[in-house]
Every structure is written in structure tokens, then in C-alpha cells.
Amino acid sequence: METETISIVIPCYCEEEVIPIFYNTLIQEAVSQLSEVNFEILFIDDGSKDDTLKIIKNLGITDSRVKYVSFSRNFGKEAAIYAGLKHATGDYVAIMDVDLQDPPELLIPMYEAIMTEGYDCVATRRETRIGEPSIRSFFARRFYKLINKISQMEIMEGARDFRLMKRSVVAAVLEVGEYNRFSKGIFEWVGFNTKWIPYTNAERVAGETKWSFWELFLYSMEGIIAFSTAPLAIASVTGLIFCILSFLAIVVIIIREILWHGSAFGWPSLVCIIFFIGGIQLFCTGILGQYLARTYLETKKRPIYIVKEHN
View 1 (cartoon, rainbow, N blue to C red):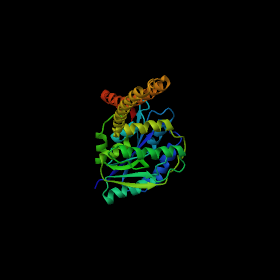
View 2 (view 1 turned 90 degrees about the vertical axis):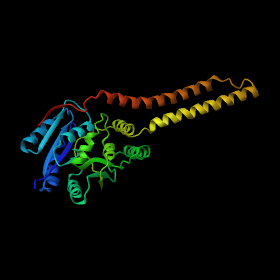
View 3 (view 1 turned 180 degrees about the vertical axis):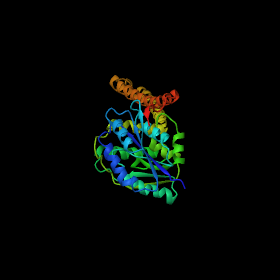
View 4 (view 1 turned 30 degrees about the vertical axis):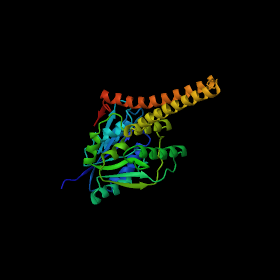
């Protein structure tokens, strides 16, 4: 029987400090423990501006299992995940963050669950957010509650990109070839039998996170727009409500004018109403613009990423 292979996809962007630590930990706590399978360690260099690629190449010289794909510029983590899944050659494919917030030792029970329990995919989620800023944790929880209410699927709260998948799951994810990607939603959308493994949040071992609060906010908006049309419905309902209110207000003004004469004057209040209604209109137009922008980008058919070099 031919030995099976696990491909580990590791997106990297300016991670020169943490890559050696990650590699050594991965070998000690996962690769060496699963001696019955082969490994492909696939680093995706997302246009790093430091020595990330150089360090990866040096690892590849001493370890033939280390592969890399380097982008021509920074395309983002979603593009790196997609590229990793596309270039991975293993029978099973795992996605991991290089900062060791995804414990490598979990690969062992993840692999066992697929082999012995019949799962197609084993994913991880954080039980706690210890070490994370309180405001970020608060908004993250609100995001999961919101998207689960307004979309037709449910994303596990605290879900990580860290997961191990069969080749059939990887093929299904790659078939979703949209330009604006939200992997957490795509993984849920394609379905398959998934087991969730909870674990306690771990902090980065070195370096700094590349995700600012604003970038996370934009990423959450990407997820909502990609997997829900509820904002469009909200815009429509809001417009209808204000049409009804405007009609009722006109009726009230006419009645007051008939009964008390001169009660329709008062330009300050009128200006305030105009500004308020104008703000609502711009808000609804902005929602439409976000969906139109995504449609515009999809119709361009630009590549999700461009490879500069690989081994």
C-alpha cells in the first residue's frame, strides 16, 4: 500500500522571526509523531518584504519536504490559502498559521479523526480569546452572531482557518473560484462531514500580527457581503419605511395647516429632515455600491494571485 501524504499549507507575510520556530515545532510535535505518512510543507510567501523567502529557501535546502510558492506582490491571506490548496499535492491538506496560534500537535488527533471516524474534514475553533484585546473579542463575537442570523449558513464561533481536509473537500473549495474570497464561509458552504476540535487560544510566539482592527473590520464586511443579501433587503425596507413616514408627515402637515394656519413654517426643522433623509439615502446607496463593486471585480476575471517563483 502506497504511503499517503499530508500537505501543510502555511501562508506567510513578513514572518522572518517566527518561521524557524514554527518549522522546528512542527517537526517535533507533529511530523515526527506521524511517521506512517509523508509530509509536504508548503509555504506561501505573500509578497513579503523581509527575509521570509530567503529563510524558506534555506529550509528547503536541508529538508526536501519544504516547498514554497512566492507571489509577485502582497495579494492577501485569502489568495495565499487558495494558492496553497491549488499547489498542494497531498492526499490530505492542512492549513495553518505560521505564528503558532494553531498548535501543530493538533494535527495528530485531526488525522486520526479522518482515518478512524469517517470525517471528511476536521477543523478547529478557539474556546477562549485569552490574550486578545477586549474590543477585538467583543466585535468578533458580534460578527459571528450577525452573519449567522442574516446568512443561510452557520459559521462556527471562534472558527480558525486551521483544518485538515480530504482531497475531495479541497477540490470542492477550489471549484469556488470567486475573486472576493471569504474562506470561513466557503468551507461551510461546500459542506462535507466536519468535526470541530476546540482549543484554548494561544498567543504569537514572535513577531507582530499583520491584521489591524480596521483590516479585520473590512474582512468581516467581505464575509457579510459574500454570503448574505440581507443588507440589500435592509436598504429596500428602510426606503419603504421612510416613504410611508413621509406620506404620513405630509398628511399631518396638511391637517395642521387647515386647523391652525401657518403651522407648516419652520425651515430649521425642514433642513434637519432633509439632511436625515439624505443620510439614509446615501447609506442605502453605499450598500448597493458595495455589492456593485464586488460584481465589478468579479467580471474583470483577474487572477486571484500571480506567482513570481516556486520550487
